[in-house]
Image (cartoon, rainbow, N blue to C red; front, top):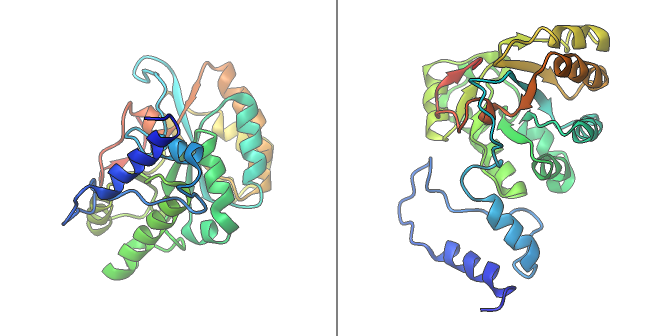
Length: 263
């Protein structure tokens, strides 16, 4: 078989697998990402590779023996996310981005979420419109999570496996729905309060209090938070921290429905 034909054959195989009654958690059929054509074998091969279990590719860190910290950014993507990605790329730092469906939808073609994936960061579900999930009727709760999952998958070709409930508000119903969607609930152990105190020096100082296994809460929608990033990276690097994604912090995909706040 010619090399260029292999991705097309693989795509045909994936598309033709019988799946008469898929469950909602692990047997979903892949969805072709927005703007990707089967006429582009190279792009298709890259997409098929990204669909393999373990996305994003986990690096080999044993966070039980080294000082790991997971930086997480909520409420984007926004106008400052691109600059943040530039800063993280310069330092070869990976993070986890908990995105809002309505903000993803406002970005034509999903340029920013696709860049987040392309740079090796982890995407997480932060609901569609940032409501208190615990106050919603079931159908709205389901919609807030499911619509964001489906949109991100359509745009990027990957299925998110972590989520953060807005305001950290969760209960048994939220846990049950996230379990059905195959999503672990990720809270945090260190809040920088960057949404309240728009001062880069203060944000960097608070982030510098991280301990091994900390999950740090930040927001990429604030210019001042992005401005704090070089300083906070320097603080934590001097303390010997390794920057990892949430999934890397736990060594594998966290369990769907379960709540996590630190390692």
